[in-house]
Length: 510
Ligand SMILES: Nc1ncnc2c1ncn2[C@@H]1O[C@H](COP(=O)(O)OP(=O)(O)OP(=O)(O)O)[C@@H](O)[C@H]1O
Ligand SMILES: [Mg+2]
Image 1 (cartoon, protein in one colour):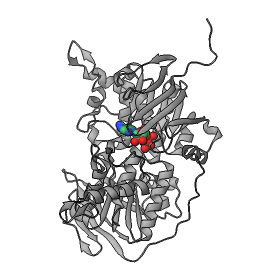
Image 2 (cartoon, protein in one colour):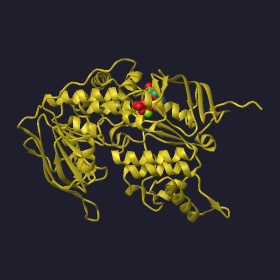
Image 3 (tube, rainbow, N blue to C red):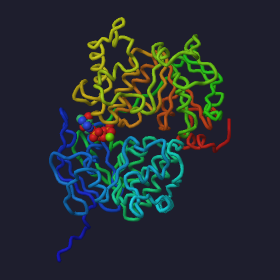
């Protein structure tokens, strides 16, 4: 028998084409992924990464092209075909059911059966523990998903995929929601997986991470694969240039625009759980016009609740003042109308109506303001025109303003939300992870928009898991831990590593 010198790739995609109305999401994509490798896929927002992965996972049918798994051609009609072929996917947006346990979530759809219809929970629990131990996932089968932080949830998603026997794992932006320590843990698990012969396809916008974890990196530009490179022979900058197809501008130096006028003052803000435990504990701060106040912290230390309290979504004790007005008792609507913009943490749950067109999403939360309203009436043409402006200014890649938000790539959805919340010159912007999931070019563009608004007097509360963003954007930087502001750090002198240890409580209180 004739043998080839190199083994068959675990995954081979040849000439993949996928069209949507008005867009070619993938054109003639070719990709080879070696078994036992971490293979990264990078590209701008809307380049076609998620679409390609959904095709490999059987969620979408390619219009043209061929998929080979371990050398054999396959046709997937649905994800269950892909799962049967040993492929698993963890999506860009988590898909766990909150009010169920880890065990229930993991076995959902693949329940082990014993004696007909009885589910054998103890066998399932045992396997979950085994997989968790084998790859250092630290997953407890009996935890309620609701009670888990994002890092844990993600490990549950990975475990679920492994539980179903996946040998090829697709992770779509797994690190977007993680802090550096969690990223390291994830990478350690991934290295364990590939050592055991698993293959990982990994999508990320964080090019430094890609360079540190990947064995090979494929760049996709405008729907097509442009190059596969070796991480040892490239740089983050070179990758970014391959992504956009031109050289990047050099970032400008920053100047302080902080004034003496207080725009937002929060005093003694406390949020309690139904059991009475404080999750935001006596937090006080002021943000002046032209100032960005950054809050650093490991996810789940009260950031989300703090934001919800300021937005009036969650009851809280303490006082909140907007300029000189006490807004503590105001509704969320009234706060928004009076100039508090909000970029929410979860764009699907709180930021968008996925099954509505872009221009209706422009109106969302801003129904009574110009240009969306004329007196008591919705002003369609005003809203439509302004949506077109946002699409243009924020470079939202879309065939038009009548497509549904669900048809936009993750990063382009985010750009639309940022554009909407920056409209109408808010006094204060509460920004939770404003550039989560956007590519390096779009991230720089959003930062420019924020800096320009800050120079016009905008006050920003910035919450982010991206420590470079926090350090680079903040005029003042504080660390939250266990619901309390535990220390202030100087953003002009702190390194991401130092900030990371301040967040985990190392280095003492200040
Ligand atoms: N269900 C859909 N209907 C219509 N168009 C779609 C659909 N899904 C994706 N698209 C379009 O296909 C293109 C590629 O989108 P995709 O989600 O693959 O991008 P991506 O590379 O994953 O971007 P991001 O980094 O922002 O997640 C985009 O132009 C997007 O608007
Ligand atoms: Mg995507």
